[in-house]
Image (cartoon, rainbow, N blue to C red; front, side):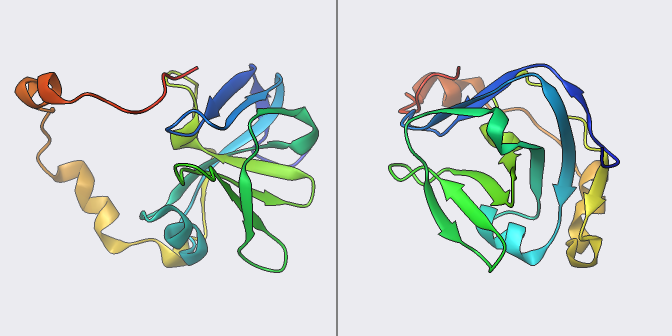
Length: 148
């Protein structure tokens, strides 16, 4: 098995609106963070934290939409709310860690495509941090589906 794969318990996840959910059976998985420009653009973020598994271990509720982002890869997303869900290539699927059910273990084995890593990431460890104002949280009524 490729370097970086470890045994993972079964896990699941899905999109914000709940239209697409997935479940992955227990087995080998690889956690990594990809900094390539394609992942940056696909997520609208500085990097994509990904969990790679064999595609035949994935079960779906709802049907994700896909877009071919290159000649060898497809990006899966919810056709209703647009949540980016995965990167698929050959016989593997790499799920976006942000789509995992909260509490799912994620321990990146490495950083990929570091030539595209944004320079300001290192500064984040020294930047001031703050929690969300409870008054704001009290006013927010989420329209997101419950996790699970």
